Image (cartoon, rainbow, N blue to C red; front, side):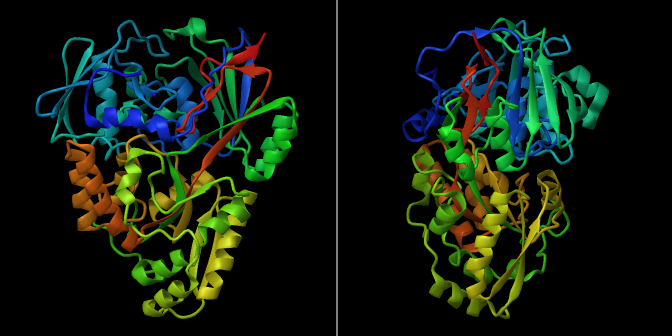
Amino acid sequence: MKITRVRVVMGVVLVLALAAGVGASARSSAPPALKNGGTLTIALDSDPDALDPSLARTFVGRMVFMDMCEKLYDLNGKLQIVPQLAASLPTFSADKKTVTIKLRTGIKFNDGTPLDAAAVKKSLERHKTLPRSARASELAPVASIDTSGSSTVILHLTDRYSPITAQLADRSGMIMSPKQLDALGDKFATNPVCVGPFMFKDRAAGDHITLVKSPFYYNKKNVHLDSIVWKIITDPAARAANLRSHDVDVSEGIASTELQSIQKDSSLQLFKSTSIGYQGITINIGNSRGLGKLPYTNTGTAIAKSSDLREAFELALDRKVINKVVFGGTTNPDCFPVAPGTPWYAAVKGIPCNLNADVKGAKAAFARSGASPGVTVHLMLGTDPIAARLGQVIQSMEKPIGINVVLDPTEFVTSLNHEDAGQFETFAIGWSGRIDADGNIFNFLHTTGSQNDSGYSNAVVDRALTNERKAASLKARLVSFHAALLQAAKDRPIIYLYHAVNRDAQSKKVGGIQLFGDGLVRVQFAGFKK
């Protein structure tokens, strides 16, 4: 999952405040001397979904993209937005409805074709219009896109849109080779071509993804590695074992159960950052026909039909116990999609949050729901031991209330497909987080959100989230976010449980790796120590 620049929209300026509250483990000591060559092997805790920036939605996919698909903007170690493929931060018209982006020149895609304004226009329009695009609602306020010469892109907005620069610092800002888009169309993920230090070589589903050093990259002199292999190892104990045996050089997502063994190994180094995302339980309320197939209609399950039953379900959960028993005290329990220590957390002031279970309140809500004791609720979750433990703890907390939780362990990418199709009742799933709160909220809670898998639709929430995008000040945006989150807290399409603390580990033979508050391991300029 980045320096003070010229003033732009409020969404850019806001991220400057994040550095004070969100941890980032960019190294402060002098970087080690690195040798050129070699293959870095990195263990991922799950298989990424489609390697197509328009369609992708997984956190591990974002990690792979970091090395092969650069964006118009990026984040630095203080989670400040900085130009990447753009030459500077965008400029805005007086009414904030026209956004002008200057591009760097002399940049080539990894097929040798030039990056220019026409290429940027083609990618942004694809993000907006490709069927099933996960970027559609992120760029919905962009009415049209023009170019001026070969190095200037002009976005025309339907109204002022405060998060626009932050959106372009993630997958909405990834630019794909027009040549490859023309060749592959919606099959782009089978052989993706972007601008990046590494280029796609091959993929074996469920096993590995291989990238090799690009001969076209503008900064290739600072790229030390010959290749990167992303190895899919879903079992946390197996990931840790592979790291300790040095069969992998880096491991993403060190589980709490493996921390002690990693910390005791003198050949390894652990590094962490506090997430700006969240983990929780998505409840399928209205996604009866599939994501985006409006209007959403109630799925008819007991928990979908009754907000009282959803309240009972949440009040039965003890977030502090979950943190202790499942995660060994390594997460930050919370009730919201925005993280403490960020400017956005002020939006949740006054909204109730029970970190401990309220059994009495849960039983009262259950009685109001009219559900029969032993009512069944299916919970889709991962297949690893930590997910199993989470499911078992949730089962034990819900049983005294009268709710029988049935666990449905499902392989990760398959579970995402089920989620999009509306083929689930509840789903233990999270979000890696964005520096602008809109990226954590709108996509999931607005009726038209491109990741609104809950099928949630509420006019109060829709109006508030539409207004926050137009607001010109932090204060005004916080007021709108508060209204949206207050209503969503009553309806409970998503029950937020905690903010993760990202923990990754590496061999001490490796240098140049960074982990920022967005949780993304950055290895573009890493290498093996001399």
